[in-house]
Image 1 (cartoon, protein in one colour):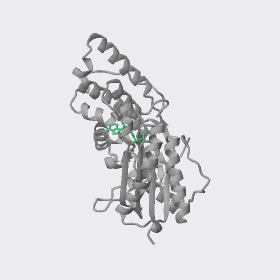
Image 2 (cartoon, rainbow, N blue to C red):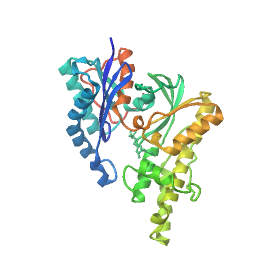
Image 3 (cartoon, rainbow, N blue to C red):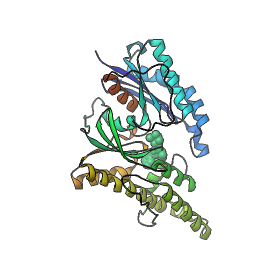
Image 4 (tube, helix red, strand yellow):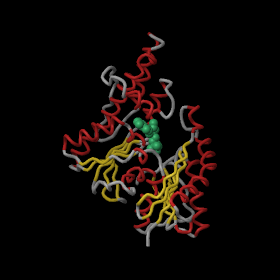
Length: 340
Ligand code: KG4
């Protein structure tokens, strides 16, 4: 009998539900929350209210598009954390209530595992291209920057991670400082494609091992912009493409330096990326180019699976389900999850 998994994701500002049959995608519905744009960042209280409004229509749409009845579900997989507690509470509570109503097993998923396994979602009509184990995943999102060794769908080891800000936060803050809008990553990505990445230089961190740091480079941009505006109030408007290209180049250089080190240290040449920043054009090009040069097998998940979505939660949940894991009803969401 087929395993049909409903995935529910509500860790930040996207309400999403997806249905997979034996790992094949049947539907993936995402309701993004525009309400945060005016504030230049996610407002947690507004996010949880929007999740409350979205969750029922999003889940119901995902089931309809999948052509699946709720009673056909084998399990409900939901994001337990990490994320915003109020947002996670909505998805978790809804999953539990639906599980009780349908007498359907629950499986809890670590959001980061979802990002790491996103490339395993199979789609009708598209070639199945997946990394083999063990592989290295560069996990880069708004809340995390990690290099993870993946030995199986259920076995992960963090080789390095940010000691302060996530790289997505650096993209978002850069955009905010320059008054460009939210979320910053896609805006900077677009402007950077029209600019000169070698025009400006930003201080890079010197952090030992495979860990990252992005707070210093953020401050470096802040002081740079402040000093230049003091000389010319129109500096940003006149140079925004070059600033974005140079700042993005510095961020991608930092990410790539440690990724190269991780591959060298582990000898693992299967490399993939995950998380919202994995949608970045320059990062994607660089990984492919380095891979070609160094004999890596590189895997880039489709952009729609890099930012928050429930298909990745459903695929991670599917593996937990196959392993026989079930989640008790008294489980509570957690904003931080120390490890996998
Ligand atoms: O994975 P995600 O949707 O949410 C978290 O779990 O954090 O990632 C959101 C982050 C934001 O910081 C956003 O600016 C960044 O991903 N992002 C990008 C791009 N698209 C989204 N960063 C750089 N380039 C992009 N094209």
